[in-house]
Image (cartoon, rainbow, N blue to C red; front, side, top):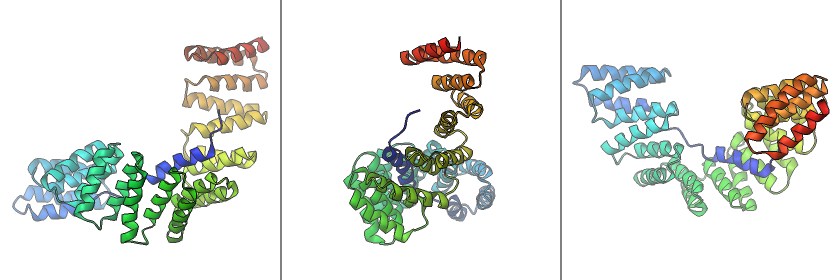
Length: 366
């Protein structure tokens, strides 16, 4: 259970924020056009009507089944493929979404919305080169599609092309000086280059335009951490937590800062919030267990370390510290049994130091 550098952790948070792209093209828009082209096919017309109604009512799985039936009847209609792509993206099945949008683009290559949506899907698949081409094409076809420039900037950042990303974002601010996402993205790009003062200027501009956006607060917090201004960073993270109370990562970052400052009670509460929001968040559970152990609250430490062994049964540290907690409750026989498991895992993973500390504790217990 090692402490992580606060700024590095913040940049991981930034990575998630900076790559959030806008929504893809809506399926029902395409379906309306598709209906106009299929007046003579009553079955297809009825399927498209049903599909649109299902999309409008949020029944996306049923809508997808309808569109997949419709595409069998008309494989030359790009709007049906775009509808399928939209619904697959809603399901986070980006491979299927990209395939559907490729079909739509093949049928209607000069449609900027299709190109943008293809870029969106490819970006989520990690195909940065493919996404870059699609976003560039979308921007060429529709220079006022500001989201295409934002998406392009994101994939360029991933490729380490900071200047290219900044140029893409500046295309947005040139066209719309109030587009706060562009200023936020500029700030994030500058942060990754270590250009902190310039990043602060861009992020403050984003905040002035969007004071209630949690992602802006998170980026500002990272900038303050880079400057060593921990109080200001903590305030920004707390702002973000108020704006987005169900974001476990924000509470986790607050907890890290508080723990680093040895404000253990407050840190513990933040770790608990993070763990309650995301029960699979092992770092939060690790910290909770460690704090119980530090306070010699062995009973709660036993409970916490048992939870960790359920989350990751191959981590020998969890078994070792569970045994330490059991020792604290004078439950030597159980501790010895748990240490046997810890020792076998340390041996299997080639961690000789772990084997040595297990043997030392076993000697104490026997």
